[in-house]
Image (cartoon, rainbow, N blue to C red; front, side, top):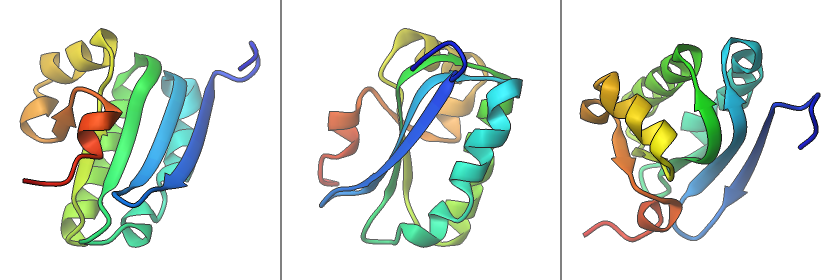
Length: 119
């Protein structure tokens, strides 16, 4: 990632989930790009193929990004799709905890945990 590219997003379908890997800074400047990437994800996942938002390589998560996660979570819930956030680092986890979003979102420590079969 170069200086002109603060955010990259990549989708991957595994046996366990539809994974959206988010890398870089999620702030007001990059939230429009991330919002476009989130459009329709609830329809690409399914009750048997959950959506995992991998934020393990997010270096900054501002309120604009938090709002996108909450909105996507609601759309997934409305579609009957489970959504998990793989926090992966202290900066993201601290932001989610401080804002109380760990009570609303299903947050796991890392991508490996997110891809484990439900027990």
